[in-house]
Length: 270
Image (cartoon, rainbow, N blue to C red; front, top):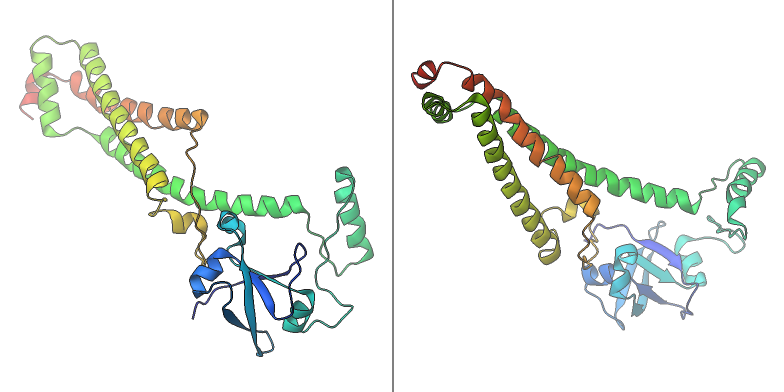
């Protein structure tokens, strides 16, 4: 059993013979069918319907049509047991885009039981869903970075304290120690940023983001296949750089300053 949800629609852009349908590439791959094969679906009434597959939708449209099933109007009404002259959903095209909300408001007033849904509302819903899933990954990454920065800012190891004590004992000034340690932390965080960015680039473009794909695509059965193109947003990269490299470098200064102003002999003795 596939245990997946399918989207059934009437094929408006093509003529289908009775008993024939067109399916999305994701559905065809999951069910293991090809043009010329037959496929069966259980209707809501429990009746089993068997159709012949006339065609499979192009793979390039799989992102939005992986689970799509296109039928003729007669087969659609028979499958969902919709009597002639009745419908469940109506698509309305308004010539003037500025009047869309006004038309939807008038329809809601005239037909209180109806639920007008604008195209922009559907797009906004999908965008918020993807943004929410992206936010999960971003929150986990931010939490991991915050824990690392907090651990670094909470104190220094015994070896690091001894190193600073030796530098102070050989006449290093506090400012010199702070500058040296700041650039040391900046170099470390910059190296980590470049390595992480390169690893993320390879992971997304060469391994199809296999570690994060299920979170970003959703917990579904029919996962679409699509190739990701290399897109680098300078603003995003700069923002990520500023909020990762500089905070980590700055977080190291407070514990270093506390040790640097302490007597070198006391620091080296622990």
